[in-house]
Image 1: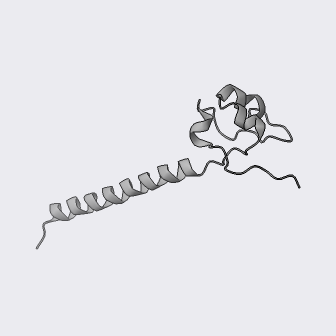
Image 2: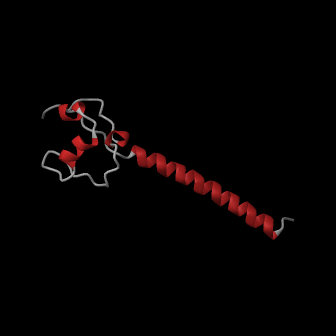
Length: 88
């Protein structure tokens, strides 16, 4: 019959493993949730954070406002979309 210490230790190991798996999944989902940059000439020209902030810090009718703090490297999370936008 298991002791009370062994049961608590087993529970802590199981909870730790579940927590670690959950944390890894959340990090993966966080980096995959960022929207891709539309494939327009302005986005293809430069990936410098200063160029992104010119349009997206305040936002205009054409560009949405950046909904998070400036993390210093926009292209790390926001990759360029594969296809070009077709005019409607």
